[in-house]
Length: 379
Image (cartoon, rainbow, N blue to C red):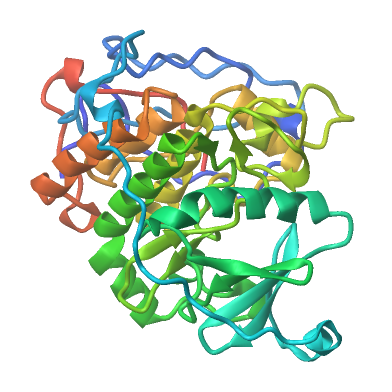
């Protein structure tokens, strides 16, 4: 397979770095819309005694155009008017609060435990000191549940101090990518086959769900493969709005958002969302992470410590995307905040889907230097 003429191929990198000080020195990353026309620069010297790090550039297939944000929204950012659902409400048992400890715990997150209420419903109960998060989630579900969007987890109501939600036994998208690490179970061949079969559809459904949230004045703030559930029909629904914001109002959340790196200013910061300001680009950035997991089957900077991840984010050093097909460009644009809205992302995804180009087809060579996009890659 021929390589892109304007950038060397990706090569494996050390699985672990000692400390963030031992990482590469900062160098400016070219803009995604400024095509690389000069050879890669020589390695930057590092401190004496520290292991030398490999400098690499990556290339992406050049079929999709760079999106230049403008002040005026594109047509893709003006979806059709939402319509309320006329479906009858679902029901669930009103069990006594004294019986709640008898319910099996089938999951847990930063903000709450998930209890199995019936074979088709679960009860999310707040963790200690996370009542405000669950109240926030209830308010968001109350707004969006009237539409019964196919890519939103169905909200049924409240029970005592918890919220009742639809149960999807297949679990989260993360299981189909990485397996169930907390149970010591790896990903199965069936999971991998289903991921390969449905990932393009899932990518579009995730973007469609996020577009629906934005249309309702909601920024998810925690879009991830763990917060994307797989239904019995192998579709996806988004869930966990405990750290989300509605109408620009940030609650005093104690849940760490997906893009927490950008809020770290010094060693005393922890990245939790108390008083932080979010934009729809934070969701778009997070979607890029989910797509990277789906196509590369790796987590963003998964082997690095929190401090190292913050350093990598600040220096804009992203993982290698070579060999992922045209989705490379979509992921790159998510990470570079090049999407003005989820509708523009959906437009690009349609082009990727129509091309039929995926990881299994291998990567295509760049056609001339002007088609190439490069940056420092860190795996």
